[in-house]
Length: 129
Image 1 (tube, rainbow, N blue to C red):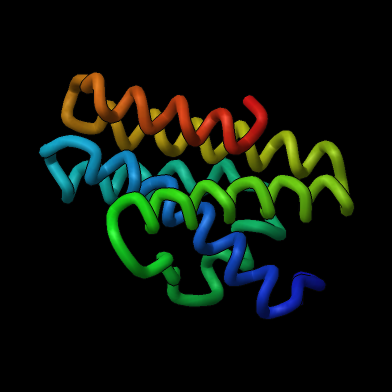
Image 2 (cartoon, rainbow, N blue to C red):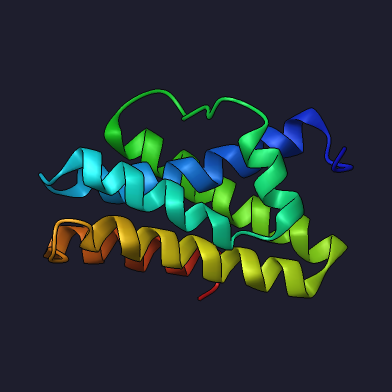
């Protein structure tokens, strides 16, 4: 299939879905529109990563909102490191795709709020962007 272990696959799914969830819950908005925008934007992920993300259910960290965010940001950092070991181009494409997904989720209702923008900034930082 993709050559990723189950643990690596979980990390990638947590990173991708988690980043979108963090942006989506940062402010009240059109959750349905945001979900659709994020799922559509997943097409920009590198093909092997998209295959892994599509192959299983997302798992978000448990705990408080801060615990969830910290866990997702850690998964983003781990995902970039994992992908960089295999291909610098895929790591860069992954980071760009995740930032793009977050931006599409944030703007799905026609505007990007201050809290959404702040979350995107933290996602960018975790991705080295």
